[in-house]
Structure formats: C-alpha cells, structure tokens
Image (spheres, rainbow, N blue to C red):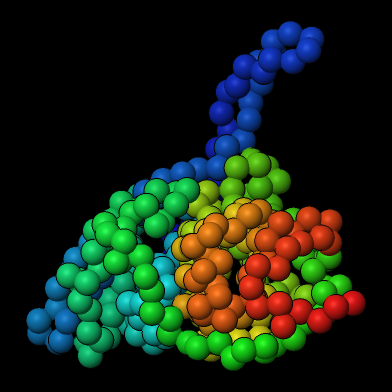
Length: 280
C-alpha cells in the first residue's frame, strides 16, 4: 500500500507590507528526498541497488517511481514491475521496485547514480552521451489532428486541478488531456520532471502505452528532459506555459513531436509539428 504524506506545511513568516511589518504564517510545499531502489535479477540471484535519489513532494510516490522507470527506459510496461513497497514505512523515504526476473538491467549504462534535484533532472546525468535517449514509441507524423481552439481552455482546466499550487504557489504541474481537450489526469510536485513522471506513472496504471491520442500540458518551461519523458510515453503533443529550450525543440523535431510553448490566454507558439494543429 502506498504511503501518503502531507504535501504542505505551515511556516511562520514576517511580512513586509506598505503598512509595515506583521507576523503571520505561510503554506509551503514540502520537499523531501526519495530513494528509488531496484530489485532485479533471475530468481535465486536477486540483488538490490539504489538507482536514484530525487527531491520531491511526498505523495503519489509509486506513480513517480513507475513513471521514472518508464521514461528512463528501464521498463517498457507496467507489468515489468512485480511490486513496489516502502522499505521504511515510518519515514516513507525509500521505494523498492521489484522488477520481473527476465528483465535485463544494465546498471553500468544507467550512469546517473544520481542525485536528482527538484528543479532539473538532466543536471544529474554524468555525461552528454547519457543525455541522448532512445524512445520506446515512434510517433506517427501528423496524427492526431486537434483544433487550435481547444488550447484556450487547457490552462484553465490545469489551474483548477492545481490544489497544492493554490495553497503554496510553489509547485509545478503536468496534465494529460484527450484530443477534445478533456482533462484526464494531473499531478503536482516541486520538481517539474517529477510532476511529469507522476503523470506518466499514474496514466500507466489504467491506460496502455503509447499515449498516442493525448495532449500533455506542463506548467513551466519545456526543457529537454520534459520532451524526452513525453516521447518515452508516446505523447504526440506537448504544450508548455513557458518557453522551450533549444535542445528541447531539436529533440521534438527529431521525434516528430508537436511542441507548443508560451500558452497564455489562448495565444501560443508552435516550435515543431504544426501539422497536428488545425486552424480555427
């Protein structure tokens, strides 16, 4: 059973206003480390090894681990994980993912032995070679086609799903929509890449990959790793409220993904894959 912790905490604060100083309190998003540990190998020769430590907002930790393992190319489907459990139930800081015995795990290739910060996942990689990814699913060019008018409603739907952001103003969000603009799932976290992994992991529980008829919206910028994770899940259209990076655009183009940035009040920029967006 997954352990759910508080996601926010009230802290004392000294506010400086135009009328002077006043004491009060402020809700802050919790940021705590989570160790992701793998159990793998054939029966009778199982080993455990730490894969990563990430700073995250507690809650939906199993979604985070499942999404992380998929987007890092360690698993290809949810059945590759036999079970997940916490190794210290009181603190709920270590998740052990037991992989099926036949699954090959090359720990030497996974060169992030990684301390992943909440703000950026790519910085945890140890070499530029490790940044390049192999996508599990090839996107069909020009499929699906969505109407441009639906983008106007995406940010409002995401905002309504951001309950933690409403209290703290300090977390990122990732949401999945269908091609009619209906919200399917949303996740929040202090780390934008964690929010994306939580979203992918949650979706994997109920939906088969690839997510080839979906739109993903992220609340921050679209960096390389966000595009990589979306490609690994087979998401054809990625939209960000902020700017993409140059490497993100290059990766989206090479993966034939539609990448949209600066979605604000119905206006946006299309950086790649414009053929999936029908005017009007």
